[in-house]
Length: 399
Image (cartoon, rainbow, N blue to C red; front, side):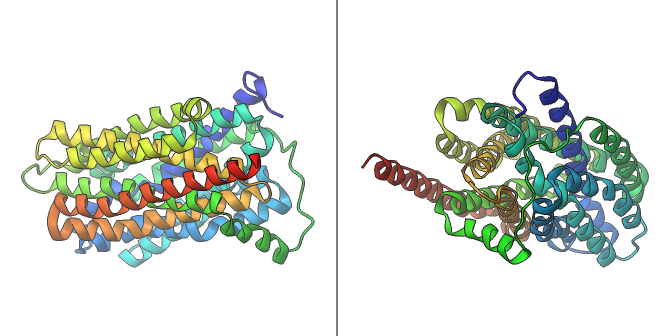
């Protein structure tokens, strides 16, 4: 197995980081462009959100098919095929004319991105030692956040200069260059054993995870967490371009630099897990994120920025720990288990946008606080339920 400090570990981390930058750079590219699209196509904020949410929905729908394919042909092949299709789909999407065509192209992009997203953690869970896995997942999630930051900055900055089409084409070209590095550095599957079961058995093994409270509770936590986090930033984007701030798109996109706090906490999550456990980190992250939503209520930029930093720090800590939890506790069909987690995660991101942006349209940031508060309370209840489940299992093991 690949262990910490080896050359294979460094090469694998580098390749997975490049893949994450490609995937999440394309996934979030349209988020800072939503105000521009709303104005260009004369649609409301919640309608413009389709350009963002459709990609999440396509990704969620594509996760399980890709994961099941990887059980037959291997994790590496699926990841490389997924990454290879990204520049092609991006170039095709740049030709869209009507808004519904943009949304459709984004849904197709999401389905392509799902190949890498559904398999990466399963690859690490099989190929990495337990210690290497705990550290690598945190680093992988940190790369996700960096990819999200860079794409949003590019979407805002390049969008002002070149429009959304030029931005899509440039990101597609960068993705093609990154693919070369992944091909060179990603190690071959060494521990993977192809499934001998048919599709029906594989599906049965995958959906069996939904009967396991240890896994399904973590999936719900991840889904609610992402439903809030990514769409709180969308609401903040609309808030900053509106009065009294009236900031240009390129400046507004700088708010996504607040993801850097999430880069730190996700990188740190592995060490937290080894020392304090996953559940305490999920609890802490939820509380920190809610504190950030409350702090961002003030109509002064320093308070809004600090609030978004706390939201990002808390949300990424929760995500990294919940994601790794599913990978560690799924004893069979690991790719299916992590794919199910991501289905919850990205469905949450898609549906949550319509919920929080509706709250924003109705009551401004106070509406975002109220809508977020309901979901944060549900997350705390789920963390409590997972804690009780773990305590009960421990008591049964000792009996």
